[in-house]
Each structure stands twice: as C-alpha cells, then as structure tokens.
Image (tube, rainbow, N blue to C red; front, side, top):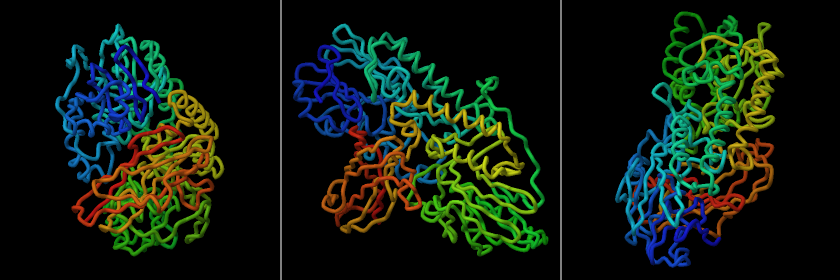
Length: 621
C-alpha cells in the first residue's frame, strides 16, 4: 500500500499499526514503528535515514520495527512510565510472577522480547525538537498504563498520534487492554478497570487542539471532539450493561459503585443454607458427605483443606475421601491437589475441556494458573452420568467464569445441588476477567450456563467462594440472558472485529505448548492455534521471529490455515467445531546458550497483519 499523505512531509505507512513518517530532506522522524517499515519503503518518500522513533507505548506491534533503525543510529523516545518495558525485558520474562499465579494483566502479553535502548523518556508537557518542528507530549494512559500521545503542527494541521486511546469514532481496538484493578481489587477482577484512566485521556485528546487524531490501529479522525463523544457514550453503555449482572456487586460492590442506583442492576437472588449432606471444608472447597461416611471433595486449593479433612476423619465426621472433582483450573482451586493425592490417594476428576491444563500447566498461559500439575483419573464428557454412593452425578462443560470450567450436578436425598465453581453469584455472573475466555453468543459462555441451570433447575447452586448456596428464578435467568444478548450488541458496536469476542478473548491466537524444554540441534514443534469467533471462514498465516542462529524448517508443516467460522475455542477432538492451527518446526543451534527464549510469531488474520502478536517460551538447559 502506498503512503497516505496527512500533511506536507507527514505520511502514514500501513502495517500492524500505522507508522507516522515526518520528513525533512532525506531524514525522517517516526511515530511508532511497525516491523514492516523498512528503508526500502521509506526510500519511496525520499528518506534514507531515520533519526528518531517516538513510541506511544511498549507493545511489540507498535515498536518491533525500531531495532533495525536503532542499529543504524536512530534514537528511541519512549513513555517514561514504560521505560523498563523497553530496556529491562529480560527481568520481565525471567520473573516467575509473570508466568504463574497471574492475577495482574498489565503490561499484557506483548512485551518486547529483547531490549530496546531508550535515548529519552518523556511525559506530559515535554517537547521534542527536531528539524524545526516541535512535538508536544501528552500522557494518555488507558490502553496501556504509561502510553502517551504526540502532537505536531505540520502545514497548518495539528496532528495527534494517539496510540490505542481510541480506534475510530465510538470504537476501541479491544477491551482486554483495559483489564486493570485498583487498590481494592487486582487486575484479575477488574474488567474495563482502566477506563478510569482512559476517560480523562479521551477528554484530553478532545481538548488538545488537534485537527486530526491518528490511532495506532483504526482510522484517521478529522473531528476529534465528535470521535471522543461517541466513544464515551458507547463506553458508558458497555459499562452499565456489564455492571447490571456482575458478580462483583456481591464481592466488591465499591468497584461498581457508580452504577449502584442504575435500574438495569439485577436485585440479588435468594440465598440458602446448604443441605445437610453438603459441608464447607475450607478455602474454596466443599464436600458431599454420603450416609456411608465417605466424602467427595470439590476442589483443593490450599493444604488447609487436607488438614480439615484429616481432622474430620480423626473426629469420625467422615470415613475417608473417595475422589476430588475439580470445577476449574485456577490456582486457588487446584494448588493443593498434589498434597491431597499424597494424603488420601484419591482420584482426580474433571471435565475434558480442562484436564490437560490441570495435568500439564506448562503448556498453557492463562490467568491464575498453577504450576502444580497432577494426573486426572477421569476426564468426563458432556453430560456423563455415574453413581457415587447414594448420589447420581452429571458432569457439564460450564464456561461461565473461564472456558476451562466444569459444572457438577449432584442429585440425592430429594435435592438437586449444582457445583458451579466460580460461575455465578446472587448478583449475577462471574465474567470479570477478559483473559478467562468467556464467550458471547447463543449456547456459548455464560448463556450456556444459563441454559443448563434453566434445564436442570437446581435447588442449590454453590459457588466455591461463598458460604451459602443461592438459586435463580426463571425470571432472573431470563433477565440475565436478555442482558447478555444486549451485551453482544453493545460490545459489537465498540469493537472493530467480525465478532466482539476477538476484542475480549486474549487467547483467540495462542501458542501451544506455550512453554517447553527442547534439545539443541533437535527439531521441535510449536502450534499456533486460532479460535475464529467470526461468521466467515478466515485465513491465518504465521511466521516465527527467531533468535540469531535458530532455524525454521519451512518444508515440514504448513504456515497457513483456513479456519472455519465460529469455532469452539480448542483444537481438541471433543469440539464439534475445532479451532484451526498451524505447526511450525524450529531448531535451536548446537552452540545456543542455556536460558529461556521468548519466540514471537508474526500473525496475519483474514488479510490483516497483526504484527508480532503472540509468542512461545522455549527453554534450553
């Protein structure tokens, strides 16, 4: 694509993001730098050297092209609040806190894989002088915590390069970037939490005097005030919809305090004391206790659960533990499974959708993931039913808090009890973490959970974190479904994708295995997997960005795949509509040094280049 002219000597080059090019003679200053920007492309604008690269944020699609120009003498200008994410990336990638027990989302999964030296760190009010031009800096956090915008006057135009503050009038590139907590709650619980930073940034852009806004992704906007106003209006509608049926109204009501009087908010459902055969153990665990004295445990996230069960045995309250059913893979539900197996030798049971996450967590990168893998003795299929003591058990895939989630219906003593893991509260649904992969649409995500509850009509629903059970009426289930149907519409208005799940699901593109240990000089495989949330077949193409000396065996496997529409979220055989995947065969050289290597992948989806969008971790010992 030819360059777009914004003003005399000011151009845009297309790529994963827009790269702004300000030209003076044969020299250029760049605003961000996609890895598709080369001297050959710049030569068409009369440029043969780049002197500065002004970065709006730290993420790879925005700045991965800067390395080549830095090697030729260019200086990097970066946001002061994100300097460490340019220069100290080894520390980031080697910190176990960024690999396991992940309750933070910022800075997100697109940190640079090798250092990029910063010549100057800038923030609000700073000015950058270059060739007679003055570039003014605005702090505009939101999409990232430290992102900035750059204002420059050229040929009578005041142009603002505003990063991912907005995408287009009324639109944002994604929602997952806004996952950010407060002093009260962690990032994990704070869907859209960074709107508290984004909204002032949007107002600042509208008041900046810019005649044009140039986003990283999206369209050039010639009426900044109108673009901002529509974005704020739609963001408010999204927030009200989200808050209407959020479990956070139960757990952290202050986070949603601005909507406490909103008529959209659902009143809390009825609470119930547990039936006599259900006993709260400790932490996030319940036990079903048979008349025989045997116990069936649900989840085991802490050694205190095992200690409590041992106390019960000593006291004669139970005779033993027959098995443990796992509702989902989060660390506060599975951390102590190895301790449980050692203490009781009991089998672990769970739904087939998450068995591999529990057995082989190294292969996945997900929120709240535990490194403590454990074998799964029984992988249940959808609606698999079996007898345990005097109870009948039925297993469900129950993707209401995370895609990797189960539900267990227990019927006995004239009662129906449903163990919903973390997928529900008296105030609604536990969809508050975009990376958890809770999908929108009929028969998916939370609407699937509502369908199951409506069908089985449990007397008691248990969330593992709550001391009491609750239940929903048909009217409450119907209301939540109406809100979710409206959610698909309002999210779809704001997110410029074929389906809004592309803007919330962090793992619609993912590497598998995410992390593996390999031998030098021996080929190893990495799959890049794609969930197609859209209604049409899409073509995906992948290219690895390898460390020096590493090799991609292009003759082995294909790097392009056609992905069917509306796939299920996994490549596994249990899916009716499995995801698509490409398999890349890579080789580390015999002389490679020991260590952890972060290998990014350049991704093109349905004709749109997304940049170095995802990565895998490869360990050489």
